[in-house]
Length: 543
Image (cartoon, rainbow, N blue to C red; front, side, top):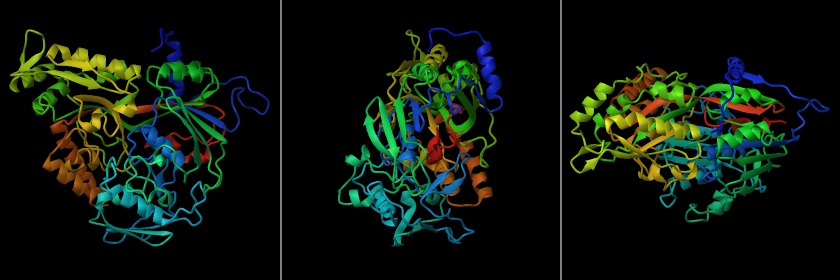
C-alpha cells in the first residue's frame, strides 16, 4: 500500500475515463509517433504471480493458464467474449457441421495440416491421444481428470483426425478441447511417451512450444522471457520478445508502470486504480470478468462441518461493506458461481446481513462464549485460520476486516498467507485440505458447467472440489446439466443446483471482479478477455 493518498480529483478523473471503458493519457512522442520509452517489438508484462508449473496438467495458478496460452496451441480457444474459435482444429465441432454426432456421444476433430513443434517435429493427432492417456495414467499426479474421465475411447484414424467417443452426452467433452483450467493442450509424444510418468519431466519447466512463443529463460522469482516460435502455424508473431516480470507487490507494479519499466499491468489492484489517471502514455480498459471472489470453507474441519456455523458466518459479515471499503466497489456482488452475463445465470437473492440470526444459529449449534471471548463447544474452540495470496495489500486488508467483523461473534481468525504458487500447489494447503478458510478468486471458463468445483467425484486429488462438499442433489444436478447440450434444460438444472449450493454454503460467493488493465498506449491488438486469459490472441500483439 502507498504511504499516502492524493486528493480525490485524481480518482474522479480516472473514473470518468473508465466509465467509457478505456482512456489514454497522452505524452510527448518521438519521431514515428511512439512513446519514448517504448521498445519496438518488446513487450514487458508485470504480473503478481509466478507459475507453479508450465504443464497445465500440474499447474494450479492463473499464471500457468496465461503463460501456457503463449507457449501452446489448444484444439480450440475462446476469444475475448468467450466464443469458441478454432486453434489447432480447422473448425469448432458442432451438431450442425457433424463434428458432434446426433446422439451427442461422439466428437470428431479435424486438425490443421503442417503444424510443427518448436523443435521441428510434426504435431499430429497422436500428440493429443498421448495427452489423453497421460491424463488418465494413474502414475501421473494430474491436478484433475475432469471431463477426460468421460471419454469411453479415443482414436486417431489418421494424423489429422481425432475421434472421441463419450460415455454419455456431456459438454465436458468440448470443454477439455478449449484452453485453460482442465483443458490441457496436446503434449509432445515424441519427447514424453517413453517416460513411465511425467510428474518430474524436464518439460514441465522447460517445455518446447506449439504456440506463438518459445520459453527463452525462466529466472525464478524474477521473470520469464519468451521469443517467437519460428514454426508457429499462423506465422511468426509480431513481437520480437515478451518479458514477463514477476512483481508480487502491487505498489511496485504501479511504480514500474509509472516509470515505464513495464508496458502492461493486468488486473490492477483496486487500491491502485485511482492512480492510473496520473500515469502518462497508457490506455486503461475495464470490464467485468469471470473471476469470482469467495470465502471458501473446509467442510472437513469440525468447526465448519455444521451448516448452521457456515450460514452464521455468511450472515455475520456485511459483504457489500467488504466490497466497498476494501475493494472500492470495483466489482459486482455475487450470488453464485455462474457469470452474471451468462445465459445460465440463476435468479437468487443477495446474501442477508443479519447479525442477530447469526448469533441464534451459533447458539443452536451448541457454541457458547468462553471467558477468552471465543466460542467453545466441548473441547473445540472456534479458532480458525484464514489464508489468501501473500503480497496483496487489498486481500490482506480484507482478511483484517473479516477478522474484526467476526470477532464480536466469538469467531477468532488467525491470518496465515502463502505465495500463490504454494497456496494452490497440488500438495499446498488448499488442495491438501490443510486450511480452514480461504479467501481467493476462482476463474470460470465460458461454459457454466461447474461440476469440477462441487461434484463429490472431484474432491482432491481428483479435482477442485476443495470444500470437500458431498451432496447427492448437487451431484445429480451438476451431472445432469453437463449431460445435455439443450440450453433450456441446462438453465433449469443450474437454477436448482445454485439454489442448493446457497442452502449448503460450501463457500460464500462474494463478488465478481471488475478487471482494470493498464497498457502502453503504443500496444495494439491487446484485447482483455472476460474468461481465462488475456493472452488468447498473443500472436496478434504489436508494439
